[in-house]
Length: 165
Length: 246
Image 1 (spheres, chains in turn red, green):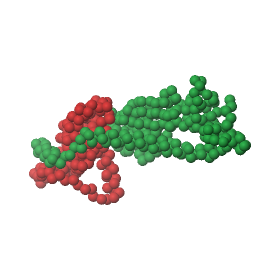
Image 2 (image 1 turned 60 degrees about the vertical axis):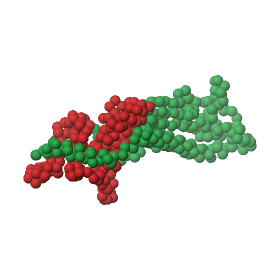
Image 3 (image 1 turned 120 degrees about the vertical axis):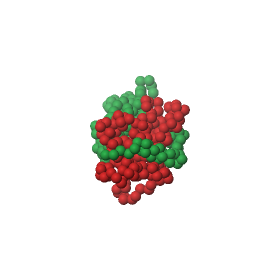
Image 4 (image 1 turned 90 degrees about the horizontal axis):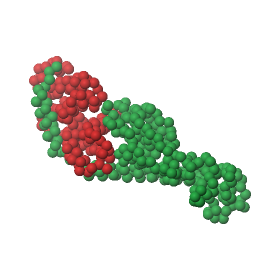
């Protein structure tokens, strides 16, 4: 059985940061907390065998989020209902960021979130996503450009090349 | 393509995380432990219920045979007969006059043979003088996993029977198909009715796994949407996985 104290410390150290990442990715705080908690539930019985529990839980949480997102998308497609938003009331930049992130393609968004929120290197993102490093760089570049459209008013109004990117 | 000022992006991310921090309610480690414990109990309960259901079905199937006049088997098994193959012992039209008067004289050898029962004849007594095992011996097998630790046990294992069990793990791909990751086979017997082993799982994903009985063929790839990759009666336990981003 895993060591309780170590697991508790690990949980305390990782829960918030992982939830931040998944919230930035999914835009749904309840969903983010749910998948992170589920990832910890998957880690607990395996605790003694995990070499890098942080990376493992992060990966599982992202996998869960992706799986659920696909299921939710299929459900949305079937029911054509609008998904309820859980807006936590952030500031203007955060609102703009959420809106910008929501427009990014899934893998682009994942790369941006991992890069900015998880401090994951390009090489690690490539390993995590199974993409080439060049592809990850491209995702990051495009992702930043999209963020520019939303976060930098000057760019939005004065840069047609960015708008068309 | 123009890039946003890095400070602005970092600031936006920082603001985003700060804005949700007050709303975060980590369920806590105790909740993790409770969830895992509850799932384990549910899984064990599910397996037990399945075993009971299987036993019930077997009993129902055998009921007509049990109602045959037991005189057919009142005599000790002959050398050519076998408790595991009562059809050999059981004449199709046995004289009712030789029917036993009580259940004690009605050994359960009137029941149908069990898949796991031995092919060869079983002597009336074991070499060590132990009682003859019930001829309707049914080996029930259960499997329970705790994380990647897997325990498969059978009880009772019919004499001379060998029960082949195996586990198999997969990785779920983005398209929903499952790719074989690892598999391992074990044989349970009266001498070794229980095996404790470790599910070899992908180091990067929580993939689906299955514990199987009766040695069904194991596909390298399970197509997306395939809901019954193995014969239903061969699956002792299973768990879904999640899509592997790799």
